[in-house]
Image (cartoon, rainbow, N blue to C red; front, top):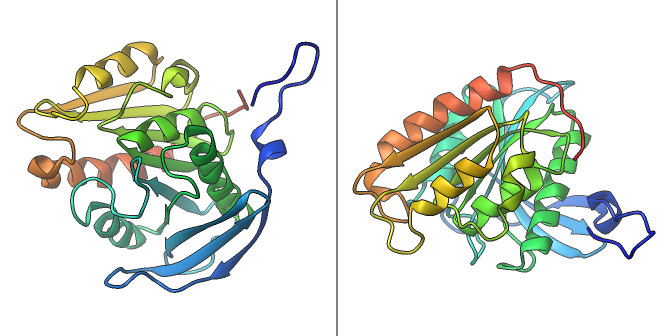
Length: 240
């Protein structure tokens, strides 16, 4: 998203084009419906959990991304899938995305932005994005870039790639970390929170490791309230 001196910087829309989305097999043992995203930069997979009825103008949606290895799992076992199914009961559609090139920050941000474009084309209003670990930086970078994102949740995040946290506002930012994390210290979350502008919230869980399994119930309760509340708020969004 950079340019040579005197040239206009490339936007995400210049870098990735969503060509079409097709049905795809669902991974064994998972819930939802499988999708394949076809872009000018390659293909990646998704799983959608559709709320009842058509999206329509202003329908609500949330997008979930994982860590540096990609996949659909999220933090603790089943957290993303459980919350995705639960939120459909509140009229919120969930889209879980894999990456084309896991651990490549730019490419992963572009994949997420293609998922945001898909939601926009389907008639959903500005979405909430949730990412874990490496994905916590992905959602911050995307949230600072896209006017179709209205809330960002960064779980056990790394600081690398999260330097745009100060540009997420006026979108809401929720940063969550376990204080017993031995992979990424919770000081990462504190640093990101310091970089960020209001509205922002920092939640630290005593005794919780990187995958947040030790605080699973508390985390899922937090997100099941924070996501619908954020989607219901009225804010004015502009591109960074």
